[in-house]
Image (cartoon, rainbow over all chains, first blue to last red; front, top):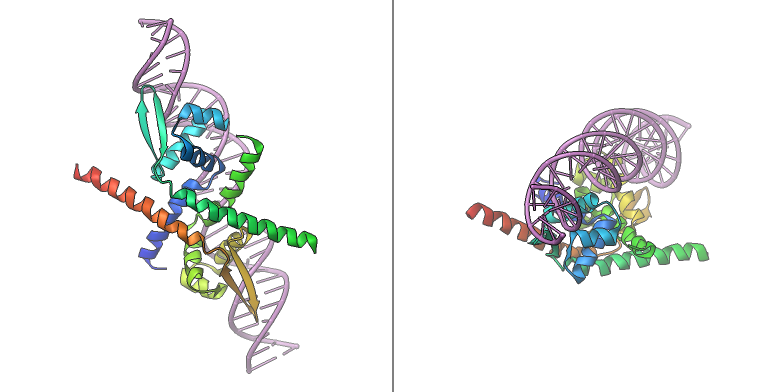
Length: 107
Length: 107
DNA sequence: TTATTATTTGGTAATATAACCAAATAACCA
DNA sequence: TGGTTATTTGGTTATATTACCAAATAATAA
């Protein structure tokens, strides 16, 4: 793997790593329906607000979400809805895994 | 987040975590063109064969690739080419991030 | 001004990942 | 059979990630 290819896959991996956490996937899902402030997301998630804030900063650093400040609240907005298309593929993987599991049990 | 939603996002995160490593993204890219045995991938990647083998087992456990044994070689095959569609979105994120960087510099 | 709400940041401890080496296993060849 | 090649697994060490708490900052309300 040459240096250029390596840089390309490193960059892609950063985006994927940013997404690869259940809480952050929940946030992406939630933001696909509505922008949300940190306090709303914190309530929905049920973790410490500092934990949620750190998850949000990971998504922001990756360029997946952006923020808008209004008054004392900071709203997080999904910047890249195309990410959602991916999940139909992921669900496909999950279903095929489940079918495979089933076929082992039925044997 | 209720238990069911949590389980769904956990399952998705497992797939994403399996993909979120430069070497594994390289493998996915490579397998999208051709099935490959561990020895071929090891040469292309340039890491220890045990390292490559472990990356492959992560992809296999996630249901992203499958294997076929022929003689003394084990060929890895991409099971879910739909994953590739995702990368055009990821590239879009990367480009938009790059454009943003540029706009800061130009200011 | 003081208190309250919203958010981020720094610190710490627990857990997870990843790389390499060495060793085990399996198939093939001479 | 003995040697070589292909692959996986176990062990170790270094690094990264995550969660929570406590504290800092900023805006708002009383």
